[in-house]
Image (cartoon, rainbow, N blue to C red; front, side):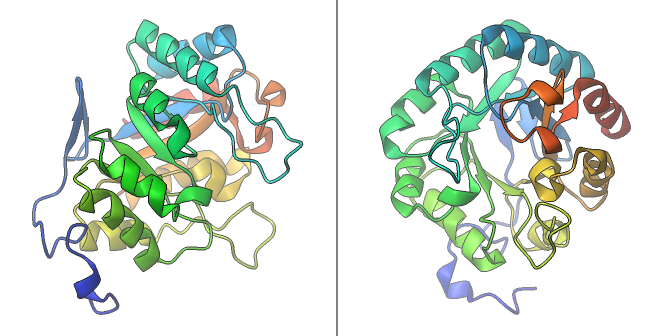
Length: 268
């Protein structure tokens, strides 16, 4: 079961040390424990009105958590970097209006206090998976954390990043597979669904999948969403918008809200 891991490096994340699965309760929402959680929303928050309309569709489709980027780490410094704290305030207000929880990315310790104030779940993106000072700071909070896999990270490196958070006292970690960089160029990334049953076998932490970043092509998000749940994922985080052509970033991988509803109907 642990043949390829150095068990001495792990004190918190493996079932070897905690034989009951972690269950995260946030208000009326339970993550883990044989439940399926669907997160939906745009890659980037534009304004209150557009997010409000998307949130109404996420809610009516069966989604329970609203996603939206406020701080956007972009490859190019010339690309839109997000609304910052104002984005946190918008997603907080919209999610409360519709009875949803909210999740958004935290990119540095400097915006952690605001993130904890306005968000229900903190997201650590692929580029920050090994930002160890940020991981330690988040570990000192009790906020649930969606920890995305680094795009070039091994299973062991990913679990050790989770270990940083748990080691500082925060047990509420959700692991999120979002695709890794391989030689394949047709899709944006290679969605490693093999990792889902492996993680369910090795670790007690909930496991989510991000099929949007995993394939980068909207027409394949639905089948990969269904496949993710079939292989044991506890939830999905999906980029959705009313009209993906008008989304600020990642429009090619964003599905419309009608497809989001179809996915929810197929899974929930």
